[in-house]
Image (cartoon, chains in turn blue, red):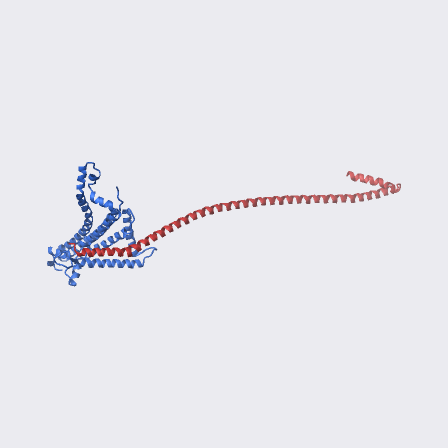
Length: 281
Length: 160
């Protein structure tokens, strides 16, 4: 690993995806094969583990993997139960999936920053990004899925209330409570503004959800690369420093990964629980 | 960092994973945990019931023990009373018997004394008669005076 390979351009180089372009002119028409491959492998391993575990479950004293997974499931169950006004058997599995999946993805950051790239080079690939949560597509996909579920429950559980909120918030009192017809007219005229404000409010949920995770993990990876680039060049001392600084950041970054997985999960639960809140009048 | 087809792919992966994890991980684990908590609750209830039954049995045992002790005390008291009675009875009987023996002995002695007295009386009468005969033989008719002497003798012994 020669020093001259690295530099300011080197970091940007390492942030490229292994992608397949269906249409060169349209940037949407490409797929990140590394993200897809990693997520499918991790998801497959997770499902395999689940099937393996489900075959050897015991309702006696649990041990080992079952014990661990039971504590995770119990933790997620408690979180959902604390936040949810009504029982919905779909929410806890969703929260569990979000939590475990994101956490496992974030954990991939424990591998050295250049490792996946080097392995990819062995197979003749240009680039390979190892942590799928660094790819905005994954957080966005999950956040949008959650957002669609929120919209689904809003419309299913309280359609009238939701539409009213969409059109009349935050300036409802002008239209509903005012006696003066002029003020009422202003209230009517403000409906589009209400709609825009409400849409921004709603859209902020998936946006903040996805960008929070993406930003944290992406920044983490950039810092790994920076540590590597800045410290790796100085011979044995530089290597050792790089190793220890990188190790320190790894540990901290693992914590961030866990934290982000938890935040994503709890916000998912909270957004859905808001959708389940009975409409107040 | 751009949104592209990966986004669609990730939605598919995420939803598939959601369905599979619900089926294979959350579902079995959750039902198992619920089952187990039901089992534990049942066990705790059974333990409570057992504890209650034990307390009840303890109280019952204590009551029975108390009763048994009381009964034993009663039996002991009765036995002591009976023993005292028997002792007194025996003592009384022995006293009575002793009294009877003494009485019989006394009667026997009296009878012996009377008998001896009779024999003596007869002998004394005979001796007296013989003596009187000898004394009076010369001058008195034995038949005529013997009644007189018997009277005297009887009178003498009657006074003695």
